[in-house]
Structure formats: C-alpha cells, structure tokens
Image (cartoon, rainbow, N blue to C red; front, side, top):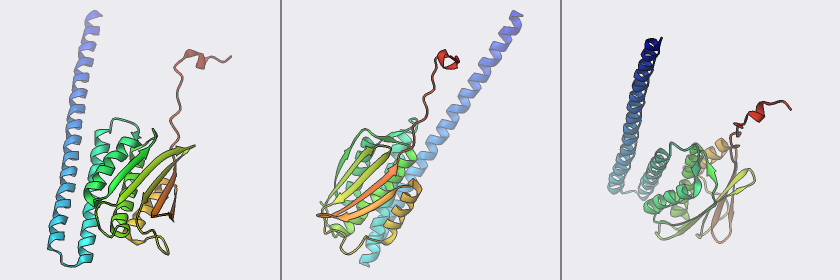
Amino acid sequence: MLASAATNDTGLARELTRARARLASQERQIQELNHRIANSLQLAADMLVFEQLRARDPLAQAALEASRARLVAVGELHRYLYEHADKPTIELRPFLIGLGDAIAATTGLRVSITADATSVPGDMAQQLGIAINEIAINAAKHAYAGQPGGRLTVTARRDGSDLILTVSDEGKGLGDGRPGGLGMSIIAAIIRDLRGSLSAQTDGGATFTIRAPLPAPPPVLSRSFEAWIDV
C-alpha cells in the first residue's frame, strides 16, 4: 500500500513538472508574440514617417502624421496593458500619465492629467485611451493649427457607478458644430461599445466629456462556514 502511494506521488510530481514546463513555454510564446506586435507597430510608424517626408501635399502629410500618432498611441497602450496583464483591472491615473507622455511626444501638446483612484478593466482602459488620443490629434490639428505647445487637460473621476472623463484644450473652440472625420467616427464607435455618452462644448476652447458605466465589481464570496448554515 505504501509502495502504491509513493508511486502515485511520483506520478503526480511528474505531471506537475510537465504542466509547469508547458505553462512556461506558453508564457515565452506570449511574450515573443507581444514583442513582435510592438516591433511591427514601431516599424509601421517609422514607414509612415518616411512616407510623410516624401509627400508634397500638405493634406497627405497631415493624414500620414495622424496615422503615425495613432500607431504610436496604440503601441503605448499595448505595452502598458501587457505589463499589467496579471491584474484584473487597470488603475487609471498611472495609465493616463503614460498615455499623456506618448501623446505629448507625437503631437507636441502639453498634456496635464488629473485622475482619482478609479480602476477599470483593461479593455475599457484601451478604448478610453484610443478615444483620448483621437481627441488629442484633433486638438493638435484644429485647435492649435499644428503649432506645438498647446495645452490638453485630461480629467477622470468616478461618479456613482459611472466614469466621467473630460478632455479639454485652450484653442479656438468648436465653431458652429462638432468636428467630423475619421477621428470622431472612431470615438463614436467606442462610445457605443462602452454604452456611454459623449458631449462637446466650447468654453475658452473645446471640451469633450465621456460618461460611461463602470462594470460592477465581482461579488465577494464569504469563506466562512457560517454562510452555509441556515439559521
């Protein structure tokens, strides 16, 4: 009987060793895949720079620059989310600070971040990051006419069960209506996916406000035996 138990223990140890080896191999493959994605995004952004230098049409140059800024922002989002993939939620403040640094580098804007301690799921953080980047590209192009040094202010706070995110510039405002184009189409799609709302107003510049419901936290399961007792 003791020999049988020892044999079973040896078998379990062998299976555990194999499972750990498979897990380590999968983690290496995922890491390699993420490195390839990051390198591909950087390569695509560099190719757009070369095309922008070759272009003579100002509209084509502006479109290539906007595309490059989008790729750089997506690369930054991918890097940050991969580094925090082991966490169920993303704390908004450090996430937005990193995104602000990337936006400043690609657009020349001076980005200011104010956020409370709200955390959101990774996919929601990614969508919000893309929306903020699109608003920033629009501000750099229209509010500040491509001149570097314009100010962009991003604030995020929890309001009950909702997240309120505002992105403001100090440019010439929205004029007679809200901006259109590819950027606003991307933002509209994100808002629909988040089941949120978007408002825009002019007050010494343009201010965009996104309100989106925060996912409900998972229920806390009691580990006490008292929860199983019918009193």
